[in-house]
Image 1 (cartoon, rainbow, N blue to C red):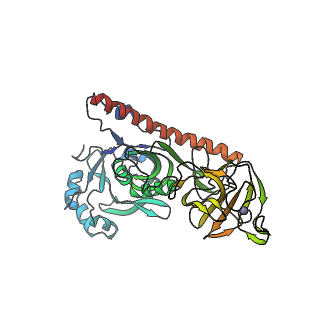
Image 2 (image 1 turned 90 degrees about the horizontal axis):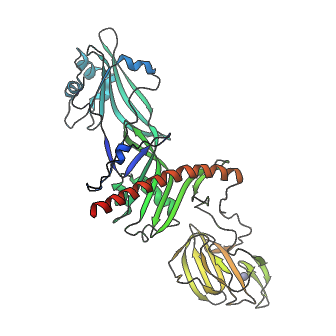
Image 3 (image 1 turned 90 degrees about the vertical axis):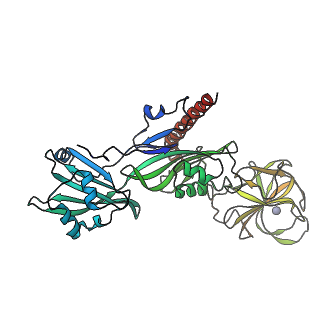
Length: 447
Ligand SMILES: [Zn+2]
C-alpha cells in the first residue's frame, strides 16, 4: 500500500556526492550515468540518511508498522488533503489535530516539508509524523523536530513533539570556475557559508578577488547536517584542494594533541597566522634590535631591526604571506622590500643586492617565497639582511616579542596528521578521478 508520493525522494545533485562517515556511498549505478553517447551531465544520487524513528525507540518496533506512507506538503495544502494522500482514514483524527494544543505544530503546513504515516495490516494508524522543523541550529548541533501523533488506546489520540540532532555527514563536492567562484559553488550545490569558509582558509594563498581564472577547480570535503536526505546545515570544511592557474593549494583541518585546531596543507605546514623565525636559511645574527653604535654613522642610535650576516646573493624568503607594499630604493635601507602581512603585521627586508625577478608592488607572496638576495646597498658596511618586524607600522624586536610563530607539528601530532591527511587525500583523489572520467566522457562525446 502506497500513496502517489511514496516513491522515495531522490535529490539529484550535480557534481556533488555524499559519503557517510563510514565509507563511500557512491554506487556503480551512479557512475554509469556518464555515458559517451549522452551529454555528460553526471548526476549523483544523494542517499536518504534518516527516517523519523526516534533514537530511543527499539528497532523491533518497526515491525508494528508494516506500511509507511509519505507525502510532501504542497502550497495551499490542508491537513485533510494531506491525510487523504497518506491513506490515513481514522475517525476523530482530523478534529483531534485541529483542536489539540499538543498537535498545534500541524496548524502550519510548510510547503516542501514531509509527513509520514505508519499503518498496520488493517490500515489503522500506528503513528503520524510531521517533520515541521527539519533542522535548526541549537548551539553546536543541528536539531530536527517533529510532531508525532498516536492512538492513545482508548479511542482517542495523543500528540507529542520529538527532536533529535540532525545526522552529521561528510559531503564531498567539486566545482569548475566558469565565471565566478560563487557561481561554481552554486552549481555544485555548495552553500554560501561553505564557500565563504573556503575563501577564508585559502585567503592568505589566493586572492579570490583578482586571481581566479576560468578553468580553476576545487574539491572540497565538509561536514553537512542531514535530515531525511536533505542538507539542513553545514559545519566545518575538513579538506580542500584548489587549483588556481595551474597551481594546487590544499588545506586539511587538524586538531593537535593539545587541542588546538587549524588548517594545514597536505604536507603538514600550517596555513595561518604564522611567521618564519628567519628570512634566511643559514645565517647568524650580526646585530640585534636596540641601542647600538651605528656602524656607518658612528653614533648611538636605536637599531630598528635585526641584522643577519650572509654572503651577497644569499636568497631572502618572505617570513609570512603578504602583499608587496614597497619594492625599490630607500635612503638608508638601499634596495628594500616591505611586505604587508596579515592584520597589523608588516616586515621589512633591507640592503638587498637585487630583488626576485618580476616581483612588483601589489604582488602577493607566500610564506617562504624567494623575494630577493642579500647585499650591502644603502647604509651597510658589509653584506647582510636587515630585517624589521613591525606591528602597526612600529618596529618591534622580532626576537623578543611573542610572534605568531608557524605552528609545527610534534612527532606524535605528525603521525596523527598523516593518517587524517591520507584519509582526506583519498576523498579528494576520488573526486579527481570522477572528474577525469567526466572529462574523458566529454572528449568521447565531442569526437
Ligand atoms: Zn640593521
